[in-house]
Length: 249
Image 1: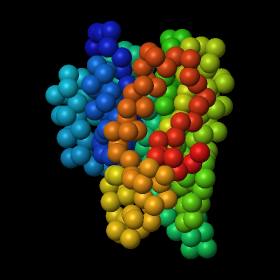
Image 2: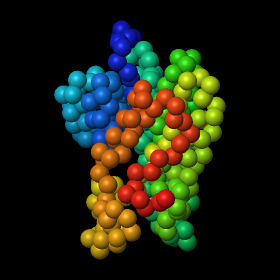
Image 3: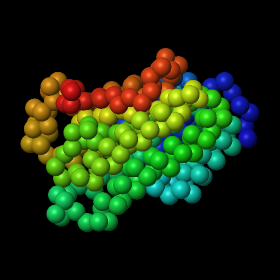
Image 4: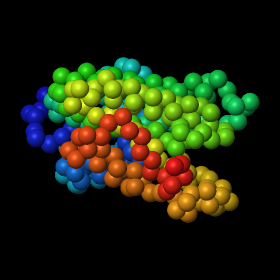
């Protein structure tokens, strides 16, 4: 184990691209050391690592599938071995397998639930053990406006993200007396790789459905995550905060 420093240590799942990468950069700017989980894109993970190191963070990359308990255990073991403590967990890893329910396979339903919901639960369980002993910690889960309002063609994704809200509120109640906060962030339409595949026609329809008439940026989500990870959010727990330009009120 490396010697403990006064810097906070954060684990970010799905941290190589999009919102995950933006969160890593924002936490690095706040002076935190990072353990970044990624599923398969090693090149993107290396780029994120380099960018965060340029901001002064010590960074460990750990490849793994959060739906696998043993991969999550390896992630937390790497964090503990390198930094000796885990102050913050950001559950960002997530996938989509969209289709209308009559065309959706059971496999596509199961896979989205396994990664988005079970993966979040796996990491929350491991973090809870550590943070309860420390009597301090921050857990931030990425949900979605789809988990609140639903969306046609995304029954699996909506169910997983609604489930994340249930996990968040329940664990917040379990850990509140131990000085650990648990909150969820629910992004709306954010400009990422996931939304870049939408046609211009669909993008125009989406923007017209947003009161602010524009998509959000990954940095809009990352700045909120950084606030919830910081010292100024100590009396906020069990909350679901929307970053959606007013889509769901």
